[in-house]
Figure 1 (cartoon, rainbow, N blue to C red):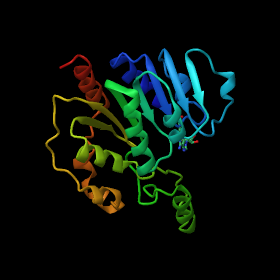
Figure 2: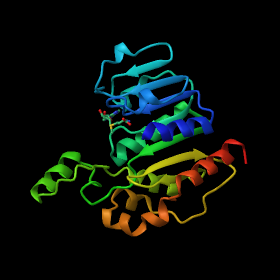
Figure 3: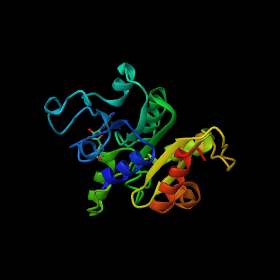
Length: 224
Ligand SMILES: C[S@@+](CC[C@H](N)C(=O)[O-])C[C@H]1O[C@@H](n2cnc3c(N)ncnc32)[C@H](O)[C@@H]1O
C-alpha cells in the first residue's frame, strides 16, 4: 500500500509537514501519519469539509491553482500523484520547489508504464485504443516517466531511486553530489516514444530493492 511506503519515508526523514497532489478517495492521504497534511485535488471523492481541521487542509482545485495561491511553510515530504502527464507532473514538481527546503523528499507515482497504451499522455485515448483491440487492461501511468529523465538530465543535484512495479520514484536534493551520468537531450525527452523508454529505462530509472532505497535515504537523512 502506498501509505505504508510514504509512512516509512516520513519516518526516515522525520517529516512533520506533508503535501499530497492528487488525492482521489484519500486512501493514501488519510493513512499518512504526519503532523500536518495538505491535500490538493479538483475532484475529491469525499467531502473535504468533514475532515478539515488545524492539522489537515484540503484544496479542491487543480495543482496549478493551488501553487498559484498557496501560502505554506516548506513541506518535508511531497507526494505527486495528480494528473499523470509529463507537463503537469513536471510543472507540479518545479512549482513545489517553492514549497520545499533543502532536505525535502518527493515521491512520484507511476513512473514505469507497463505498455505503450499506458504511456500515452491522453488517458481516454489509452482506454479507447485498448477497447478497439479487445485489451481489458485498465492501467494508465501516462508519461510521468519523462520527469525522471528530465531530473536526471537537467537537475544534476537532485538524486532518485525507483521502486519496482508500476514505479514510484523518490527524489531528494544533495548539493554535495553532481550526477555525472550522460544526459538525454531536452527535446528528446518531451517527444520520447515508449519504445525508447523500453530500451533505456533500466539504465535510467535507478531501480533498487525497497530496503536498499530506505537505507540510502537513511544515510542521506543522517547527513552522510
Ligand atoms: C491516481 S489518483 C490519486 C490517488 C491517491 N494519491 C491515492 O494514493 O489514493 C489521481 C487524482 O489526481 C487528481 N487530479 C487530476 N488532475 C489534477 C490536477 N491538475 N491537480 C491535482 N489533482 C489532480 C484526480 O482528480 C484524481 O483524484
